[in-house]
Image (cartoon, rainbow, N blue to C red):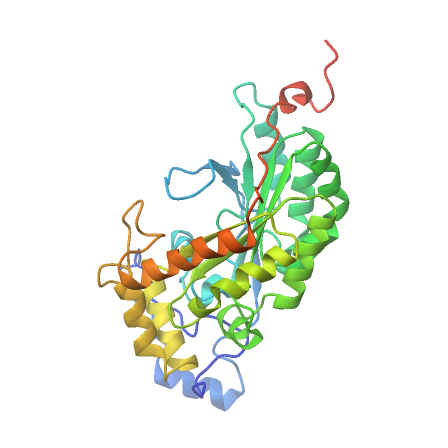
Amino acid sequence: MKSKEYIKGRGAQENVHNRFFQHIYETRDDFLEFCRLEGEEVETNKTQYLPIFPKTIVNKVKSPDVGMAFSMNPYQGCEHGCIYCYARNTHEFWGYSAGLDFERKILIKKEAPLLLEAKLKSKNWKAETIVLSGNTDCYQPAEKKYQITRACLEVFLKYRHPVGIITKNAMILRDLDLLKKLAKDRLIGVNISVTSLSEETRRILEPRTVSIKKRLETIRILSENDIPVNAMLAPIIPGINSHEILKLAKAVSDNGACSFAFTVVRLNGAIGQVFADWIRKTLPDKADKVLHQIAECHDGHLNDSRFGIRGRGEGKIATQIHDLMKLARRTYFKDKTFPGLNKELHAAYKDGQLKLF
C-alpha cells in the first residue's frame, strides 16, 4: 500500500540536497502557514521547460562500461520520472536537485540541430555512431512540443551519418518516415527500454512513460520496417523485476527485437536517497528486502563506481541474474544479431550533398 505522502505521477518523492551546495534551503513553518491562509501553493507539480544554450552538443563517452563512443542529449532532466535513472545526478551540475527537480525542470537545447550540423561538417570529424539519449530520453514529453529530436534526425539523414536512439516512448513512431530513410543505408539502430511486463510496476517505477503494450508494439512496428531494435532490459532490480527476465526476453523477441542488453541496478550519488525514499512510500513492505538485495550485488553498498563491475554486479544474486540472461539468449535470441551501422557514407556527404568528384 502506498503512503499518503505519495506524489502521484512522479517517480521521486522529494528534492534531495544538491551535493554542490554548501547551504540547504528549508521552507519555514510560518511561510507555509501564510500560503495556506492565502490559498497559494508552496510549490507546483507542473513541469517547467527552461531553455539553455550550450556551445557544443556531441559528447565523447569515456566510460568503458557504456556501449557507445559519442552521445547527445536534446534535453536535460526527464519528465518520465524513472526512479532508478542514473542521469538524475547530472541535474546537480545545473544547480538543481536529483529528485523532483530532475522531473519537473526540463532544460531545452533548441540550438541542438545547428550544433550537430556544425559538428558533422567539421573537417576533423570522422563518422562514429552518435547516440541520442545517452543521458536523458530524446522522446520524453517535451519532444512533442519542441521537436528537437526530429530536427536532429533530419541532420543525420542529410549528412548520411550513423545514429543510435535510446528511448522508452512510442513517440519515436512519429518519425518513422525519417527512420525508414536512414535504415535504407544502415544508418540507424534503436534501443527500446522494457523494464517490466507489469503495468502496476511500470506505473510506479516509470510513472510518465508509455504502457508496456505500446512499447512492445513500437518494437514490432520498427522491426517490420527493417529498423533494427535492441531491447534494453534494464535495470534489473532484485525483488522488483528480476523474476521477469525470461518473460521479458521472450516478449521482446516475439515482437522482433534482434538483441537485448541489461544492467544490474546501482544507485550512485543522490539516487540512493531518492530511491530509498521512493520505495518506503510506494512498496513499504518490500523496501528493506529490495534495498538489501541491491546492496548484496555491490559489495554491501547501494553505490558502486567500479568500472567493469558496477553495471554487472557480483555475488549470488547477480550471478543468478546473469545465468537467467544467458538462458534467455540461448532460448529466444539464437541466430539473432544486431547489425553494425554504416560509417562509410558520411565522408561523401560531408558538405550536405553527394560529392561526385
